[in-house]
Image (cartoon, rainbow, N blue to C red; front, top):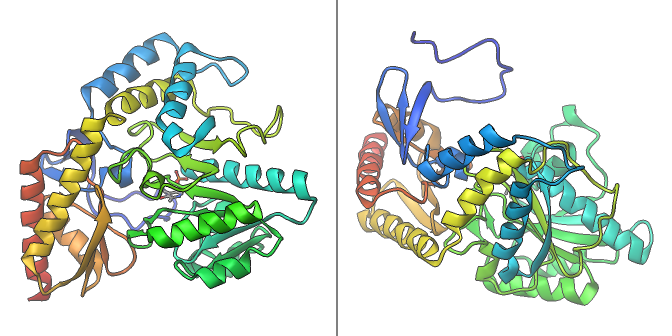
Length: 395
Ligand SMILES: *Cc1c(COP(=O)(O)O)cnc(C)c1O
């Protein structure tokens, strides 16, 4: 029973050697009964930790009642979820939502909204999407193309989707030049996640927003990782106080049940009409029940304040070590990046063997995305393991 690999899977993931059988709160248990502290939350998905009683109850009772209806018919649960989600995103100016199953699909929806908005108003050809270098937007062909990293664009997958261009983050002149009258939208992550937890500078975001408003280019925030309270506000966009036209969500949205959302504010809320877009599963009653349970627990002032407090606590503690292997600690809320002087992967492996799950973001950055419900004592215990592992790798 020591198998941690199977030929049944296509070989697409560099997996760590462990097979989990159950979880509870911020802890996971493997097949041998060994337990682990989870500082990854399934890549920002299990925001309420594992098997949260309210989420388990919502899913179980919904499953016993109604799992799926197709989007030709509404269910009471899908209706309640959509209304609650739009309410949570009102602060960012969102008015309507389309529900999908994943982050990439949510971004596909955003790209379609941008193209239709722009080309209906200004004619065909004004369809390009500007994204930032170092961004990550998904694995479908269009979102892979939108992803501003060359390593995601190998020739074997060519041809990529036409109409995407990339600018360096924080280079305003490059952005101003890119928005040349052929551009429908700017798509960006308020905190770049996959490439190293890099929050965008507020002055830069305000200037980009100003350019977008002036040139009638949609400003679209990919909050698939940074949304759902992860940074201490419900949407990371709220930190910037700029008018946003489109927001996408997924990862933490239903605490582990697949669901995604593309939300739009006044300018874009009515762009898609009947037949323009669809999804068989998107936001079905089961996913909606999970999403509603998560929203009710996460979108509260107490929970959001607790996320900020825990994030500060982690960043302060790690900075206080002044560890020789650490170059920089940055982040917002419970979305934290730690640049180290060695490769991240051996750190992940060693941490795993000592009972701590970590992620990387790029070659030399550790990525911490703990569940919101993690206890202070668990934070201390996990950080102690991290420190021991860092001591070992530089020795
Ligand atoms: C994970 C992620 C995606 C893709 O989400 P999937 O659910 O894997 O399709 C898109 N954008 C960002 C910012 C992400 O972190």
